[in-house]
Length: 164
Image (cartoon, rainbow, N blue to C red; front, side, top):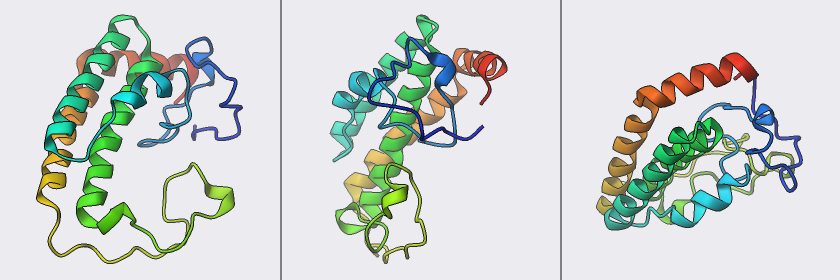
């Protein structure tokens, strides 16, 4: 099932209502799902390799704590923040100022990822080396998270119970 962007994210506590959560694709909902956004976002940094290392390790620690508490939604959100660390660091390495697409996001697509019909801006011919390394740090943690046997088990159980 696709991520449901019609939910009231201002008032929904997904720890209390995991049945409303959808894994979706990639990073869908990463900046919407509470209380996890509030718990994880303060630790999310990707400006350089030093920040990425500290951030990815801290968020991976939260990921492990959520798994230990059998809180799959929290673990999946931590995985999404780690994934987003990779994608954002790569975006800033490839595009000056991190702006990937020309023009504003259409009003009906705000909060959703994608080009939405906008052209991709030219890539930087000399990517920022520190951002490339920051992305690589997050990529290793993302691979570790999505391959974690307990995460895989809890994801399968969640999908069986609630759907994807």
